Length: 467
Image (tube, rainbow, N blue to C red; front, side, top):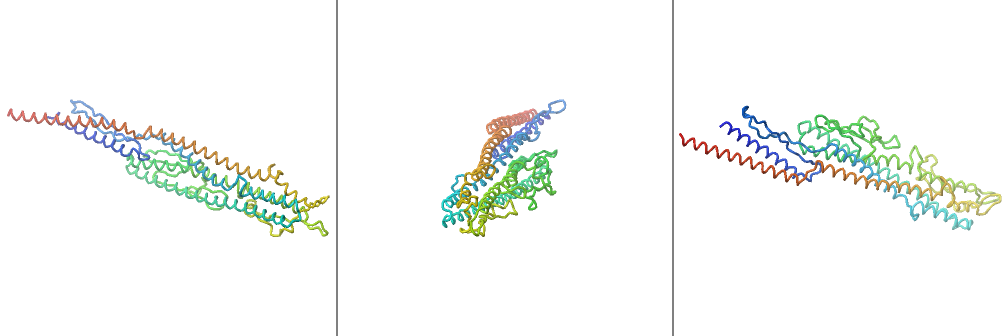
């Protein structure tokens, strides 16, 4: 009877293990479309068979194993960092590009063309009051166009600062979540598929925001480093980031020790924002370290026009009446020329200097020289219109490159995600096949129990008949 009892125990144990395996399969099927979930498999182990040692074989559970491939996950994170950066750069550059009109029908190009036209009309009739007034009107419009463009870019800079702060808050929220999940793992949930799913979902979201490297510690927790160096998560301990306010022209990213780690955030959305805020915008609007192309253009136009007018004369006299500047701006702030450019408070239609003193004196010489500015190379060996077009074209090219890179990186991310799914994702066909196999095994084990039970009952009946 001992061997019969052992057979029953073996078959019963098999039913229990097979039931567990089918439960794992059902869980896989139920979570097949859950983001971050990977196939779980109940590992089976054969028990030793040796009748002399009262070992009757059978099958036991060796625990649930995850099919997650860390290398496939890392490939997704790397691609996701690139997507985050290129997507953010394309968006930011598109916003900057909208401040520059390249059609010539509005903004600075249109205002500059109107000023050239006003100078030309004035040179044709230097004493005409209406022509003189048109010069002042066109100069005012040009000043306002520079003011508006500078204001738009300054607002974009402020919006970018807000985006940086918001992105850092998202990063801190995710690292807090990861630290909490690590705590659950330390408390015994290391093999919990749901906990692992939450962990890797959070890591993937984080990789889109910042460049991270992830290492799995011996206790199963995820160690997360910014740029491979600055800790964000160590076990259940979170290390927050912050953004420095004031004191420097650039936006600075600080770790929880107050150290500048901006250089580590080179990718992800945060990397795209920091590069745009610290490099792209200052190159146009300037900061304490550089004037910026927009201010360079505004100052060159103002200085050239003012120098030409002050070298001319309103009247040849006697007495001689010298010309006065048309434009004014804040000379103490090279990066504030475009925003402060305005019509000189002392200028009027009657004080515009049309005369070039010579010798020989030319009645419309100064006005003609100003009209010629439309074709003269006054800045970096190009015309003012050409310089402006070059700035706008450079921004447009950067935006186009970022958009193209976004498309490419998105495709690479999709490929990495597909490869990850092939390696560790749930295949419904495979799970259906396994379920059928386990169902057949379950039925076989159940049939064995039925046979043993029937045989045992028959044996007992026979023995009772003998007695």
